Image (tube, rainbow, N blue to C red):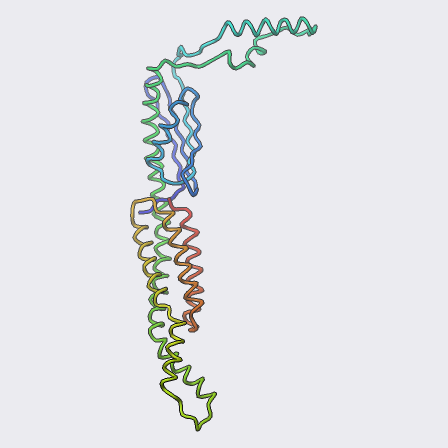
Length: 292
């Protein structure tokens, strides 16, 4: 069954010496895009995290936030003492030269961010990323369940619209089959009103006029294509694939067929039905924007 593009999951896990939090939010978008917020020491793993997300999420704007808390002190803070001393001496010289009464303090030095770095040993980074991967996978499964649940509701609404459009298609097909006889009678009446009573109606000419009129108002091809589009849409909605873009395209094609039916038809029943069908297709297309 089709999935919604919108979903949310949040997961916190404590394992070994770490607490890992993962929050994922998925919103509507024409394409797959990501907004990834992770600790700087995992920046080299960004591509792997995005690939993992994309293996589950096919379309949508996805925000992933991963936080890591160290539950025990770690030896990962590196201070460039040589650079710090250089900055300190330069600032001291500046203070002296300009006659500034304030002394140089630690706060002044901490403004130079390159003095302090956070560097994890390779083995510890691997250990942390393994835990992050486990938590992210679980959060993605939870998000997928949320999207399936929401998608189930959307699918029910879209299938209801398709059923109504099938009813329109069947009604139009039935009416269009009656059209030639009704058209012939109407043309005959129109011609007789124009002719004098003493003039005999030429049946051959009447048949030619009917054929030309039927050709101009023939909507059988449009009705058949509409039925095909509806069948495809119904099948896609019941599949487990990413079908949002395909459904949006089918909605455009449905709209095109109904517009042509409307422009060709002279029967008020078909005209009324086509106007209602256009409203239904608009509703369908609006809802499809939420499908992955």
